[in-house]
Image (cartoon, rainbow, N blue to C red):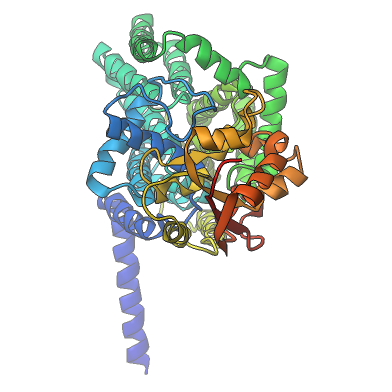
Amino acid sequence: MKSSNNKHKKNALKIKTALKQLARSNKAIYWYLGLYFLVNLVLLTTFPYVHSDESWLSGLSRHIAVTGDIGVTEPFFNIYERYPHAIRLLFHLLQAGFMQVFGYQIFTFRLISLLFSVGTLYFFYQLSRLFCLSDGTALLATLLLSLDIQYLYASHLARQEIIILFILVLALYFLISRIATHHLTDDLWLGLIVGLGIGVHPNSFIVALTIGLCYLYFLYQKKITFKNLTLVVLVVALSALFFIGISLTMDPDYLVHYLQQGKNFGVGDGLPGKLQGFLIFYRHLFTQFSIEYYMPNIRFQLIVFGLVLLLSLLLLAKHRSCPRYQKLKLPLLIVFGVNLGIFLIGRYNVTSIVFVFPLMYLLTVLLLEMISDQCYPEQMLSKPKLPENKKKPLPGLLVLITAVLTLTGLQPTASPYSVYLNQIQAAIPGRPKILGNLNAEYAFADGQLIDYRNLQYLDDREMTFADYIAKQQIEYIIYYDELTFITKNHPAYDVMYGDITPIFAEMTTFLAEHCEEITVFSNSSYGTNLAPLIDTKPWQIHIFRVKAGP
């Protein structure tokens, strides 16, 4: 019995030693990223629920590919005025390219996000190595980020946030890793990296601002010159002019239209309005309040990050001249830059909080290292080994809490998205024109679906619902009981489709008098787009065939 126990102990010790050696080697990150990719590939279409933004973006990408024209707008909007521009052009071209290989399905476009997520984790690990005393601590930071539910949310959602985050992390790593031998060619490449982000999403402004602050920081430290700053600003500015120029060829009034669209989302608010919006933004994140988007529970992260920020600032204030705490300055500046960018844009989309997470996890592990009695070196890249005989329960506890919170939050929808699409496709044969919800866009061919968001403008155009149906030659109407709920609770949920109360009575009358209900089914997950109400009850969906005009 004793020899058997000794054998088990020896085997356990060998496994433990092997894992420690793997963690210390450069191969650990590759093994982990491979595992991360495979696990998330399985969960890719089940978490989170498919959002109408995803079909909105991919629908335009498909229309660009089908028409061969980069100047087209969304085919599912006609009265809802849309103006072409090139600010998302690279993203749409990327989606169109993937569509040619993997087909038009949600998996295709979420795969793009997952691939950029893996790339972000790799460069975040490399970035963390520049700050941390050991590769193991850098791996810890990467592990925490990869397990975080907000990061996984961005990694699965077929939107641009994860690509912008990739550009931010890549640019930071490129700048900081080469700062000791910085050359003008580095400024050129950095300007191009940041500039390409303009063709992905307007949130590239956050990247540009953050990198600009880092340049000012290194300029103050005399590690670069004003010439370096001028060159990177020039390259980014030329990149912006390039995309603006393309936009003007699509729409000569592009600047007027784009500024007007920004005002509709609060981008044009003054500083007091932006400050109020910024505080509300963080309050909504903490309380998980969002009508349009899934909001994971990130209270624990926000509390930890708040404490980390406070402790970091206190340590810097108390030990201004101590080299041990100087590494906190740059991550703090980057966190400030990201938040400043979010504040200045003023859009306050809850999905943009993911831009803060990588550097906050880096700050967190840096403070964990400082808990030990090690003396920090004065040089950034000097990394003495930490003694192995010190047990550090805090990192393991942090990983455990993050993992548990994520596992409890990774709840698949009650009804799979594929079931929802199949239910609709079974009732609507051929390729007729359809009025329905944009979240069903993957069930139809290009240009087949007209979205509900057009209806809010019928009253302004002095057009009746019946006239609109006739003009658009709509043959089927998919009516969601969600619309009845929204109208009864007006204006609480108008942010989803706009104010449809002026035409609601006319629409229901038209359905009763001029349509035939061919099927009705329930779907608790995709019968509503209202995020807090998903999977709260069996939402009914009615499919009507238009019989004749009034």
